[in-house]
Each structure stands twice: as structure tokens, then as C-alpha cells.
Length: 160
Image (cartoon, rainbow, N blue to C red; front, side, top):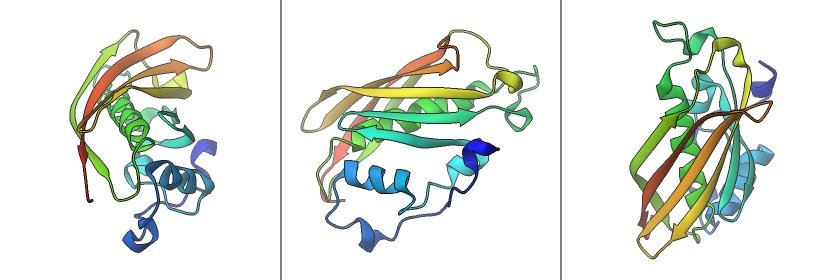
């Protein structure tokens, strides 16, 4: 799959993360300086853009994501929403501070098919407090049609 060509998967060395803001970590991932998380390989999606409070993932559908009904499993879109909203939250955090997802909610607007192909998931932070961050995400096809949307709540973890 062209979207995934040349992407390296794994975990970034914890020492290499020291002193980096969340946004800097995401930028290094996009640049290939840090590997993409291994979940991205099997689920064929990856981070392609990052800015303070906003990220974009691209994903590619296929037969490997099908449910028994012949459509892409809803868990794929929900995982994409969870990943994007979490990274949007991370992009707002200073060095040494992490997060964990408390809740992710998704809504499916239309079936995602194996032949849908490339999709885009854009997530934006709605509110960032000292302890709680909320974000929303939209999954669209190449024509801009809404496929799914959702929101998430993240807990800020100081000293991670």
C-alpha cells in the first residue's frame, strides 16, 4: 500500500523523547526520525500532519479490515478517531507530560467499504485544562464525504 511504503514501525527510545514537547515528538514521527507506533502497520493508518491542537491521520481501507457484513469494521474507524484525538491532545503538552484516554465515542455516518480507499481523519482539541483535554475528530473520504465522527476525553499525566 502506497500510504504505508517506507514507514518504519516500533517504539521511540525513551531517552530520545526526553525534553521534547508532545508536538515535537509528533513532528519527529512524521519526519521519520521516530518510528510510527506498531498499531499503524496492521491497521494501515498513519500520522501525516501535526500542529498545536490539531493533527491529521491518513488511512487506507482494504479486505484486511472487513467485518462479517463485508464492510470495514467500525472498530477501525473508532481506533482512528481515538489515535487522532489522542495525538491532538499530545500536541498541546509540554515535555515530560503525557496523557491517557478516559473515553472515546464514535458515530458512523455511512458504511466504510474495503474499496473506499484513502480516508482522512482530522482531530482538533476543543478544550485543554490542567487535568482534562477534550477533542473531536472527523473521518472523511477523498471526496470530503463524512464517514464517521467522534470525540474523546483525555486525562493529563504529569511527570511521564
